[in-house]
Structures are given as C-alpha cells and as structure tokens.
Image (cartoon, rainbow, N blue to C red):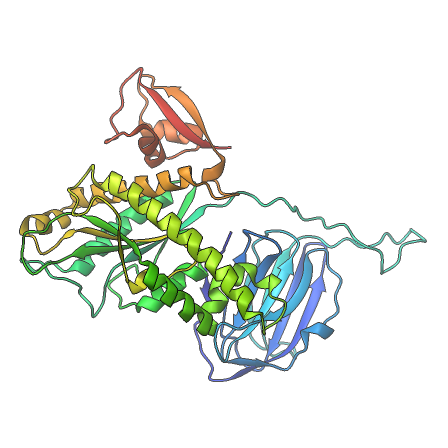
Length: 442
C-alpha cells in the first residue's frame, strides 16, 4: 500500500530543481534529481491501485526542467511527470513504476563535480537486447521482469488521541486531564492493532504534543488510512452523565467539508491522489472533481455509521453507554471525504466514578480491546480488496496440553488478539480440548 512518510530535516527558503537523470541497470533504475541546494522533500507511495506510483514533493522548490523532454528506457520506470502540487512553493514529481516495489530514497551532498542530489532507486532489472542477435535493436519492446501481482497489504488505521500539548481537553473533578486519558487508550489500541498481522496503526500524536485539527486528518489522508478513529473523554456541567458514545459526521458538515475540499488546493490534492492519474492535467474538470469526491464521501459516511454501530456494541460489553445509537455532529476532526471516520467519547471525565475508571489501566485495556475488536469486525464484514484481512481463512484448532494462545498464534502465523476476537475470549485463559477458530492469512 503506502510507505511511511519520510521527511528531510533541513529547510531552505528557496531551491531549484535543475536536472533529472535516469540510469537503468541490471539491479535497479536510479533517478537522480540535481538541485541547487540540499533537498527539502517528502515522499510516499501509492500501491493500492494502478499505475503504481512514487510521489516526491520538493518543498520550497521551483523547477527548470521540462520532464516531457526526459528520455530513458527502463522496464522498471514507466513515466516521470509532474503533478498538481499540494501547496504553493512545492514541486511534485510522480514516478509511475512497473510493480509495487518499495523505493530507496536518499539525498547526496556535493561530490566529484556534482552538486546536491536526491536519489530514488527503484529495484528491478532492465532487460537489454542480446548482442549476438542480428535482429535486436534499441527500439525492441522489453518484457518487464518485475512482478505485476500486488501482494496483499495491511489495513492502515489512523488513531487520533484528542487534545494534547497546550490543550488539556476536559478536566475531571480530581484533576485528570482528557489529553492523558486519550493518549493512554490510543497507545494501547495501537499496540493491539500492530500485533494483528493484517493491520498497521498510525498515531496522530505519540506524546504530549499540540497537533492542529487539520494536521490530524491530513496525516490520515497522506498515510492512505483505511479508517480514522478519534478518542475523547466527554464532560458535562454536572456529574450525572457517565457513559460512552460514538459520533459520526453530520450530513450538513459533510456538505461543508466537500465545498472546502474543492476550494482548498492542498486538501483536494490529498483527497484525489488515488485518482489523480485520470485527471489529465493541473486544470482538471471541477465537475469531475466533485463527482469523485461525492463518491468518496457517500462511501465513507456509510462506512463510518456502520462502524459506529459495531463499536457501540463492543463498548457496551465493557462499559455503560450514554447513547446506544451513533450520534451525528459537526466535528471538524471527522472531515475526511474518503475514509470512514468516527469519534469515540470513552466516558464522562466529569463524573467522579468514571474519572477513576478512565485512569485505571485495566479499564483502559478493556476499552482498547473493545475498539480493536470492533474495528476488526467492521473490516471482516466489509473486506477491503487486496488486504491481508480480506484474504483470511479460518482454521479449527483443538487445544492440547501445555498450549497457550501465544504458542497457537505463532504456529498459525496469527496473533493472540485476532484469536481472542474471533472466539469472543475475554482473557488469555484456554482449556485443554477447547475448540478455537484461528484466523490465518492465505
């Protein structure tokens, strides 16, 4: 699917992309970007649809190179082109490649007469015509030697710990800050997701940082998240309310967000990156943009509501609920038009009893378990094509003497969390002779 976002550390006020060179070889195709100064860049990959792409953003950079005039012959690299930049001052280059192969991307300092460079290596051999063949010419078509079959990927789950840094969120009667509770549960949920072979967690914050709302959802879009969950702890003017609830984006807010996305070039670029290859130039048809975003929005809103229902069912098994049905509201953090998104209120921190529970490690574990189980159930009901979870088989195992869940999980290449979820186990305790359903990737 998508590689981790990688960023250089130094920022120059202005830079120039002076040249682009392509070097095919028997091991790889190397693309070298020559720059006036040290590159300030980010890159990501798009491997969940074709054409497979490596997208490189050069920040605070202008270009003097016409990529349409670039000539090269490579079985690995198919197209080098520019694309609509996510923001002013950024120069975006897209490499269309033959297979979903992770690139190596690294800067090089000036040396041997060359200036600052950014190097992108795409693994894979380029065939060359046999020298002994009198009919071979440089113009003969070549057969790509890299695999076209895309391996199944992990689902990407974006977890947003509400508030943080200068924003403590709500504060309980004993002084507990909401930001601490949400981070603790977010980290526990991430551990469970990362222990599942079919999922990968992305945290919008990993510590006590101040993260703007726009940056939280933007990170989820750039990481190509399949699901977005924002964690909070509710508060009220009196101490009576105490239960958990799950919220989804309201219809009115969705219309507002659609309009904002169409007007915001940076966000539009992020929302449409999956389909930008069908938008032939930087002046794409605005009606086509709206149609595509409408499709994304309708799908994500329906998915968000179904996921909220499932999450409420699982949360209701470990804590009391304030609302038994999903609630709709105008939360800014639920503004993704392409990713099912929910906001979970873990409980009322303003209630003294609930405040004590929210800072209790065992209760946090139960909340994290419920959220993980709910998210996993949603994707089992709604499998995403070409993901590991969508290609999971169920095996039957009879527990033998001396076996534990961890031993069984290792034997089948599964995980303790996945086995517990599949069998509705509330602990790691199992008994000899017990029949377990084991989810196993094909």
